[in-house]
Length: 221
Image 1 (cartoon, rainbow, N blue to C red):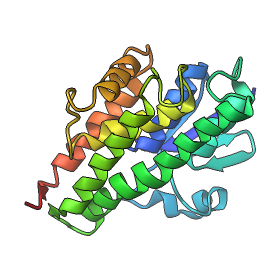
Image 2: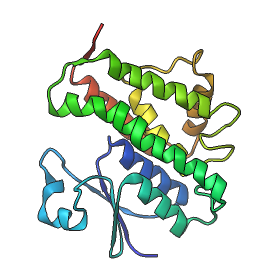
Image 3: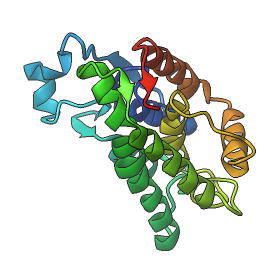
Image 4: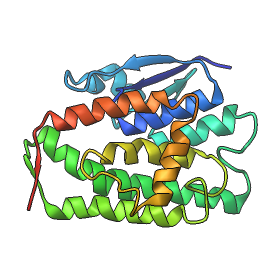
């Protein structure tokens, strides 16, 4: 096995998804914190490895991979003892892939980042009602996906769970998850919290929530 290096920041949901995958696979790796405030991601050395200058980025020997979804699928495909976390069966894999695309385009981009980008970089203090509604719609979809299933892509733990729990646990800073309205989602979260390595998400999630609360945002009435 080559030397694995993960570049990122603890509060980042995509970074946490990769950390969960590495932990599940019991892979040793070096972790390098990238100071985004100091724009370390824009350094010539970093951009040479990752032209998009984003985190997370994974180095595996001479290979550099970015985007958490690409990274976690790569890790399981290369290092997994079996294919349970990212099935080789085409139909099962298609369901996992759908959930990953859902996380990328709907949950992370349209719900989370649409708010946090404005809070952290453009000084927004009042979150529009439609942005909060986007979070609620995410919860509604997740509740539906989990109907009749223990995990987000079926009855077994997959990388889709790692990807979605990292973002869903972050969205709660804007809208708490009501157990009465979302019993399936609540049970899913409680199930994942029992994973022996869940702390790698919990620590970063708490940092993320603290940072968001530090903006003193309010929600449009």
